[in-house]
View (cartoon, rainbow, N blue to C red):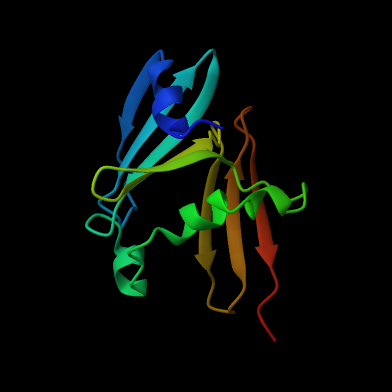
Length: 136
């Protein structure tokens, strides 16, 4: 691992496209990135731009500290955290480099019954509905 893994990866990027999620509450910056034919997703955040960091009092980038300590490497392989690399730059901006979710779209809704439903669209355009039972 280099001391600036995200910066090093971005030097090899052939495509960088800004993404503005329509349902996002964060004012963080998001990009789709292509490197050597692989697609990635980049999130750049700081306490000034990320409301979750602000409301939880996170001034030290807790996810970065967890990643840096190797905790994510110990997560069972059946759980894909999607993080490829992270770094903190400048006055505390974090860059989180993630595997691209591809063309999949996941939309969660809490139904009146308390159960959750997700619509998922795979790369072939097929849509499936997944439901979780309400909490007991």
